[in-house]
Structures are given as structure tokens and as C-alpha cells.
Image (cartoon, rainbow, N blue to C red; front, side, top):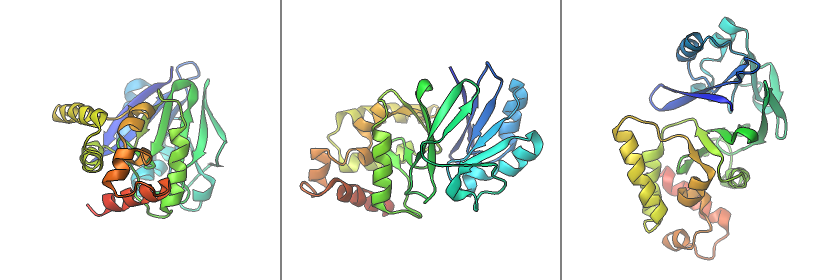
Length: 254
């Protein structure tokens, strides 16, 4: 299996180190800062091979240049973000495949949060690194794309196997869950998950990763067809994308 190390940084960011023990190759996902990554690399005796960026925001690429300077690694990012992310070595687009030793990731385009956002799906490892497109019980804000674009992007992630682990880039879960309860208060799975989430955070533990299955059961942004949610939003007969757009507006206005 792929070795995955989760590194909390800044206020609520997560960086992920991925290591293939057979080849010795190592990748880092969205390094906001370099120092914690370098510390773990030194501790493990790993050499950094790749940086995989999901999008161009500074809290996802802030460590790129320093990591490349110190390790000689390659930077991989969306072809559409090459002009916004310094020193990109390889631009990728939907359906491209990235190999990390014996492991491989499919690139999935997920416009919405930003126009060039991509995610990395390691199918054999049941691992999705989704940046700011999907959060535990939430989704990204619409900084550059439309609600329709993000909705279409999330449909791609909803279709992944339910056991897929969701490694998102931020610890936003408690706030997301509190919002979810306002729009679907009778969701038993959501109520039970929030008890678990509050306990984890009270003990200083991460709520990430989740799974696609858990998100389908608890994340309002993936539940636009829920009769209960639609009723609470007065959108029983509205198209799914309109229900999603209303949810996003409600969350933005909190």
C-alpha cells in the first residue's frame, strides 16, 4: 500500500506525503510551507520526487519553490494553471495518469473552486486527494467557477467507489457539520457523525480522511436529491443543480 503521512500546517491546512516503498519515490500534495515537509522527509530518510498541486492558491503552493530548490523534485500541476504556479515541470489535464513508483493516480478535472482545479485519484489505494473541491461534509467556495461547474465536478467524485478515502486539504469539518445540520437536521447518519467529529476535535485529532460513502450519507453538497433536504430548502421540485447552488449561497452567507 501507499504510505500516506498527513501533516497539519498553518491554521487548518493538511499537507500529504505519499511514499512508494518499492521504488523509494515520494510525492507531496499541496505543500503550503516547506519546513514541515523537509522535517518529515529527513526523519523518514525519503527523497522527494514530485510535488502534486491541486490548484494555484498560495496556501497550496507556498512551499513549492523551496522544496524544489532543496530536493530537485518535479512540480506537477494543471496545464491550465501553469501560468499561475511557478516552476511547473509538467502540466496535466483530465484523464492523465501520474505514476509514483508502482502506484498510479488519475487526474480528474474539478473546476469550480478555481477554474483549473484538479484532483488526484489513486484507485488501487482507494485514496482521493481532492484539495479544496470536496471537504468532509462540505465543498469549496466558488472563487472562479460557477455553481453548475462545481456541481458537475462533484458528480464525478460522487461516482467513485464508496470505500474511497477522501483526503481534503482543510480541517473545516465541525463548521461544515453544523451547517449540514441546519439544512438536514433529521439525518441520523449526520447526527451520529457529528458526535464522532466533536469527540475527535476535543482530543486534538483530525477528522480527515472521510470516505465517499460517508460523504454520500452526510454531506449536503452531495445530497441535493435528498427529499428531506429539498423540503427544508423549499426546493422539492427544483433541478438538482439549483438545490446545490442554493446550498452554496446559504453556506457563503454564514
